[in-house]
Image 1 (cartoon, rainbow, N blue to C red):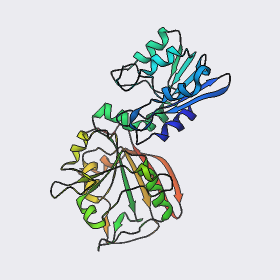
Image 2 (tube, one colour; image 1 turned 60 degrees about the vertical axis):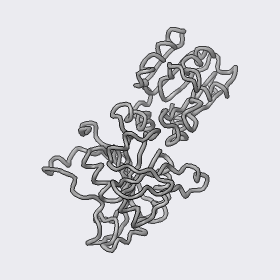
Image 3 (cartoon, rainbow, N blue to C red; image 1 turned 135 degrees about the vertical axis):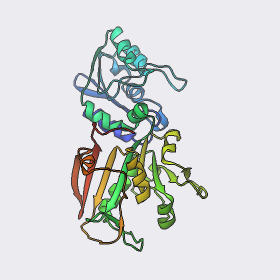
Image 4 (cartoon, rainbow, N blue to C red; image 1 turned 90 degrees about the vertical axis):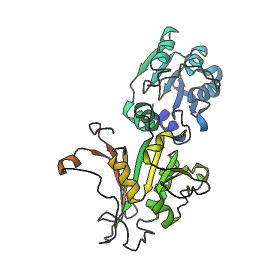
Length: 321
């Protein structure tokens, strides 16, 4: 399953509105097929793995990160039917598919065909991998990551607006990798006017993974190559965007925090002190200090060069607006 999850990451940020799924087929202790959801959502991971395995799929165990789909589509057959037709012996899944078109029907179809079914293996990891798809189904909006690059005292720029560069090259390269894992990136008009950001992916071999560029602004023209939303809540209506990265600036970050729409924080902190400067976020409506506690849990912490990188995930007990 860990191998299937690693394959699923290859499609992350490229498969919306379909989930990024990974599949590994194993027979007699050997991997006979590998697959992951392709850009645009087709072929599905199972279809790719089964095509690679050919006749060796018969009697194999399929490790798949999401319940095989059970609904018909003009873009391709249901994966549950493909697994039945190729006569795999066993299917091990990480998650049940909450899409009402499948939601248990895939497992039922497999079981009725005499295929052994198990699920719940590495479930937490699969939920993280497919957070965009799952958030869209549960809340009708993209899964939102807020990225902040700050000084030790929480500043994103000097008082003059100078901000290049707070963090070092390793941290900036990592941020580009994160861009490649999202469907879209959003900045506010202030950041757009001050920095003229390209929001591309400047890493070898990943130049084609640049996400869609979204401008949050209620006034002014829409720049060529960009999409504009007048209000942050309008991101719900953007097609094929299940994962959104908010990069700047303070007003955009504050708007998403105020709405309690931030699911994940990426914090890059440089070992510098700025003083006055511009803060990373503004006040976002906390009435008491107690409301700030128990909202976030630390998932990862490491050094990137001289900068500290931390990943935080919103606690399940935090309310969804």
